[in-house]
Each structure stands twice: as structure tokens, then as C-alpha cells.
Image (cartoon, rainbow, N blue to C red; front, side, top):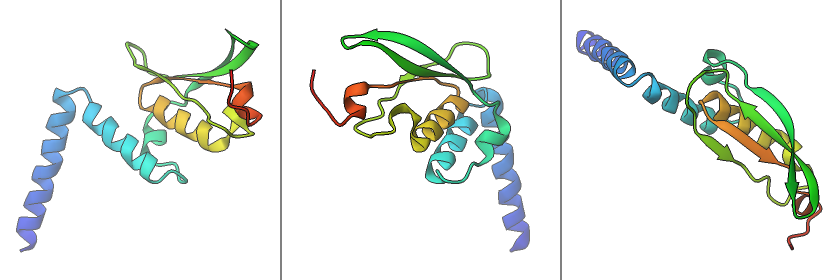
Amino acid sequence: MMKKRTLFLVLGVILLAVIAVLYGGRPLRSILLLTEIMNFDKPGWLGKLSPQPTIKTIPWEGPQGTGRADLYLPGIQGKRGGLLINHGVIDTGKDDPRLKRLATILCQSGFAVLVPDLKGMRSFRISP
């Protein structure tokens, strides 16, 4: 019985290694992203295996004047997708620790993440 279990474990590890080699590690990074989100309060392997993001504060022009946004850039080079995250109606805005954690997780997965500070929503007003 133990030999079968060991055999399946070895075959599973080999299969994961082959998938990682063939697809450039994307399946592994996807699994790490999901485990990171499922265990949101505790940093996991994604943070240990990925470089910390570079965070830049950039100005942007909107209908109510100049605003600020945090741009999270991954440490990996090459093409990457971009995500825009809205902080919602919350008084801490883009500086909410949960939002920062989510942006960091997504950035460590390879996305460039932009988190603008929306003054109206930060002050609990949802109007133009």
C-alpha cells in the first residue's frame, strides 16, 4: 500500500514539473495565487518565491482635479497584464491594508496593478 502511495506522489511531482517546464511556470504561479488569496491573512509561498513589487505613487487628472494612484510593478521582466482596482466606499481609500495586500498578491503573480485614490468614494459620496 505504501509503495502505491509513494509511486503516485512521485508521478504527481513529475507531472507538475513537466507542466511547469512546458508552460513556463504559469500553472504553478496560478496555484500559488489561489492559495495566497485563500489564506489572505498569512503570506505564503508566492511572496517567498516572487520579488517584492515596486510601488510608485503617480498623479492622474480626473473630473475633480488631480488625484493620486499607487502603481504596483512586478519585479519580473517582460510582458504583463494590467489590473485596475477600485477601493470602493471606504474611508481609508487606496491605503486600506487589505487592498494593499491584494494589490501585492496580484503584482507578485505578474500583473501591473493600479490603485487610484477616489476622493468621492473615500468621503462616502457616490455622485459625479
